[in-house]
Length: 381
Image (cartoon, rainbow, N blue to C red):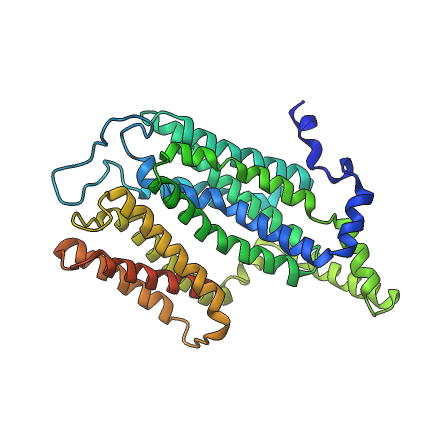
């Protein structure tokens, strides 16, 4: 019954003639814009949960007038539960679905996958924003729903992108996911700084799954995309059929290989996997483990939770800048990324123990540097 009501996502229920007219006239624009918005909306909930981690773990109800209860026994003003707990809830379900999805996801139609992504995305915002702060397990379930939605959406939309012109779909997706980090963190920090409560701010984000649905509807159908590509090919049909047969045979040989054969493909990839792992381990260790310990009582940003939010904005800004400008900056010695990022860990840890940074601006600069390294490593590797 539910699927029937939301089956509007199935392209067969739309006025195809009118849409195909616009698709034919503005095909590149539709693909790039749709994939940009899909990338933005897919990663938005994930970013919001990390940006709101300090607020989510706060013991007081965001809509009440009670003062928050923190650990007042030291200068760190911490929540009882570390924001790293939010990180685990925001990552582990995604890792799990990425491990098991390749075994069954190809059997599910794309529009049904998108329905699942939209429903779990919506559930994440509703659960986190409407659940009382004393029901932590239910709040964590909402964070896990955001993780599932983001990872399952990534699997779905990236596999779908191969059916379009990749220079259009992947470009839009990469830019949209990068923008999600900046827009999500800045939007959350800005709205809460203007006086909107964290719960109301997260609830307001329900427009995101609606935007995702509209973006998917606006995306040209696979059949339309294929017909357009074939019509623009300069090669004759015989050569095209030959190439298609060869590609299918190659794909079949890979998919039919034994587990042992697939593991043999792993060692050459380790030179990419290990540096990426080290960089992101260092990043998340800093962002979710150390950010909440970087508290400046005499800063121009007085409240601890506001400082935490703007730390995330600074990080996402740097990642966006780095991903956008890396094509003009050539770095050949790629191991420099994990080396510098691990050094950042010790710099932050040394300040936490020794308290020698005179100003919060030094932390902002270091976080920006951390984000530049993370974004650069993502693009270069």
